[in-house]
Length: 591
Image (cartoon, rainbow, N blue to C red; front, side, top):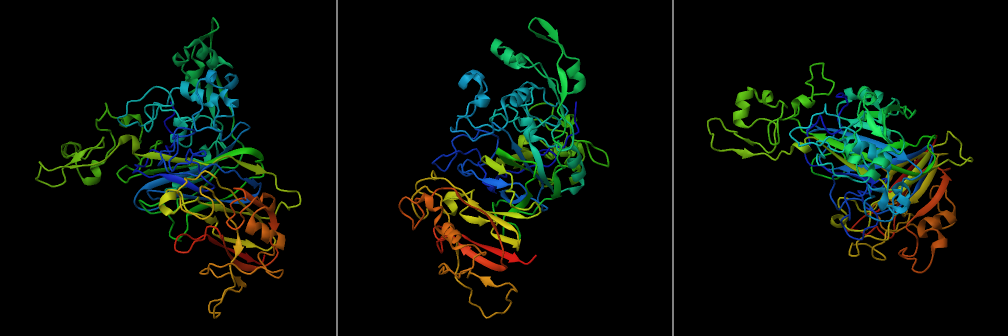
C-alpha cells in the first residue's frame, strides 16, 4: 500500500478558504445560469467554493508558444506565516471534453444517457471520462493514509475530505485530494507553488509528466457487464501491483486475474515548482504589488486541441500540524494511518501538545488534543471555564478547486516565426458592482500592465456571457458582458520622472483620444482601431454606442508590434467613474 505520496490537502491544516480562477475565467461549476448562485455544485468537480463564484460560459482559443496570463484569488492567504499552502495548476485535453448544455450532473449509469453512452452524450458537461471514474469508484482507497476520525468507505471515492463518497461529475476524489497521485491521471502538470520549496524535487520527480503510473485493470467491458448484471458494487480493484496480480474474480463462468497496466509518463517536462506567492487572510484580492497573483504559462508547442480545460487546486493548513511528511525521516514525524483516531469524535495521533510543553496526559485533561471541535482549558487553576474551538477534522487540511470552461489551443500561424513571442491580452470579470460580482470580480483587462518588445506579437481577445443576473449594475443591455479598447487622451505633465518611452494616455482621465489617421496605438491600422472600439463590424445589428449588438466574443487576431511607446487605454462601456474602472497599460520596448 502506497503511503508515501504527499497530500496536497493533508500535511497542512486548513481554515476555510475558497479559490477562484479570474483569468482564464474559472467556472466554479457554472454554465449559463442567470442567477447569482450556480445551479449545481456537483456538475463537473468538487470545488468546495461559495455558490456565487465563477463565470458563465465563454470560450476562447490560444496559440501554441504564446504566453497566457493566469490570475486567481484565494481566500485564506498563502506564502506567509499564517498557514502552509500549496497551489497546483494543471491542464487536460480530450476529444470528448466539453462544457455541455445542461447544469445536470452527467449520470453514472450509461442507460440514462443517449445511446447508452454517457461519454458521447453531448448534453452533459464532461472532463474526466466514465471509465476513469468507474475504475476510481471500484478501486480500493489507499488505506495507508491519514483519515483522522472520519468514517470511511472502502473505495477511492471516499477520502478524509469526502468520506461519504459524494460524486461530482467523473472526478476521482482521491486523485483530487492528493498530489502527486500514485495512479494514472489525465491531468498534465504546469506549475506547483509551495511554501516549502524543499518539496520541489519530490513534486517534479513524482509528477506523471515524467513518471510512469500504473493501475489494476479488468478485461474490457468487465465493469459494464457487472453493472448490467446489477452486481458492479461487489467488484473491487486492488491498488497495488502485487495485490492486483494475485486477485481472482469470476467472469463469464471463468476465473480470471486482472492485469496491472502501466500507462507510462505523459512524456513532457516536469512541472515548474516555485515559492508560493503571498496573499492575505480573509480576502479575495491583490498581492503586495496591488495586482492579483498570477503565473505566465507558455503553451507548449506539443498541444494542439479543440477541447482543453485548466484546473487550479489550493490547499492550506494551520500551524498546529507538525511539519510531517508521508515519507518521514529527517526528523519529520510520519503522518499516516497510524495517527488515525480509534473512532468518530475521538482524538487523533497528531501531536500538538509538545508545542505547549504538555505531556500527553496533561494535554488530554486540558483539551489540547487534535480532535473534532475540542474544548480547551486556557487558564491555569480555572477548570470550570473552557473555550470551544471550531475544528473540523475533514477540513484540516482541505483542498479547494476551480476549473475553466473549455478552450482551444491552435498551432501558431506559419507566418509567425517560431522564436517570436506571442502575448495574450484578454478581459476578466463580469457585469455587476463589486458586491454583485463577488467572489468574481468587476471588469478589467488582463494582464492589466503588459510589457512587450518591438517585434513581438499581441493577440487581443475577450469573451463573456448574455446570462448575467438581470439586476446586476452596468451599462448597456441588462445581463450582457461587452468590452472594447480605446486609447486614452494624451498625457499632460511637466516632464518630471518621464519615461524614456513616449507616453500616451492619461490614466486619471475618462475621455478617449480623438482618433485620426495619424493616431498611434501600438502601430495598429485605422481599421484595427475601429474594430477594437466597436467590435467586429459584421456583428452590427442595432445599438452601437454601448456595444449591445456586438457579440460576447471578440478576436482581433495576431498583430505584430512595430513601435516603441507607452499606451494607456480604456473600455468606454464599462469604465464608469466612481463606480468601476476598466483601463489598461501596454509598454513596448526596443529589443
